[in-house]
Image (cartoon, rainbow, N blue to C red):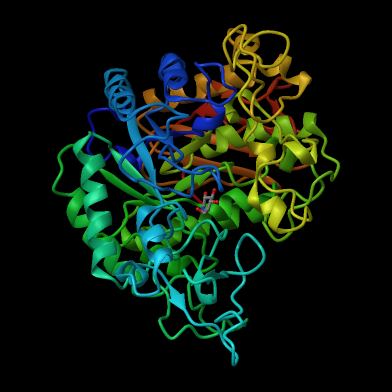
Length: 545
Ligand code: NOJ
């Protein structure tokens, strides 16, 4: 079913993530833009997705690719104008696509006017809107805490007073160019409530909340200990913020959704964000990091559904995004998990195997109960680009780790649309600027143009799967019933009369009884399902195990 008229669309939607820098470049400067997105919106409507989520598009010095915002109510000139964003929202709606924007409330850019005012004088009232603190030690030369950034390295930077003497330090959980807001201050809360309304008034349907578990900090600034609660992740105080946001979005008609980026190992703590008066949904990073392994996947699916059930929230299924290794590459490795701690480049990956598994994973994630996310290029079967020369790298994670962490540029390479050579239609013919990150020559076989109409392609698999998902009353929100299956095989039924079987065993397995084969991720051998292959079947209702 299309979710266009459903106020509870976020429970079932297929949501496509657009990373604006890398989607489509209309003006030929090598960087994607809103005009490029507008030219390609029909492609997304044709893919059949229900909603698009735009990674940040605001004015930004781009120290962290736009997750360092200097003005929350405008569009960066590299992407376009506010008027173009409004037209893009309207055009998306005409095509039946919902629009989700990315809001970054934990921190802003060092170029934000509040932070500039705070830096200008130790007495500026704006200092209270951030976390300025004197240093430790007799001369204040030691940072206030030893908290470690998720980007690696320090979380404090010392300021210089207007007279040139060393001053206070300020907190930045991410890069130094991303000062953290003080959410204990009413002005910060009021400002973001106003920003929410600014975009809701422009018709957006949802908000993806960046670093959603990190807004509240322990004001005593204790050290982080390995076993104790974190002083800056998942403090109880954060929930009141989302309760107030929920009240705001519910003032608007049509079903506006809050979707949290919540990385937490504890499913119970994670589910707290999804209580009925808080966020509508949150990303399932357990699934995104899970090994391609039947026991691990089933445990992850069960734990996910069990955590969401008591709070009545829909699960989400995410395989890739702009922060993690593309899953074609991940699934082709010996270790198929993803974690930031273990992220390394150049580990051999069998891309053919990874692609076969990614195809099966598409049918898995698109048939589990809840909403599904597709990161741009996933539908083209793109792999992680791991040979970007050091001088072209952009990601602060790479630089702050001294190159030990390869960073996230490899999943952010501009999309290949058409043609035989870079820029593969990403930029218009005749553009002199090259794409902001180099595209592999081998992507000539993975362009949207090369795949369109080829029923064996990843693109046509996604189109077919999403079309079936729309037509099937069993898919999207709802429940799942596991079916008896051989070791290494995941088989579940969605009611009415739909079964998905994923073979993660090393040998072909027979298909369960069915009346029709709806879609398979790869060729079947008569009624045998080969390894690393998934199939969707029309079945009669079966007794559950
Ligand atoms: C999470 C975003 O997804 C990531 O790209 C960004 O670097 C951090 N939050 C900081 O905003």
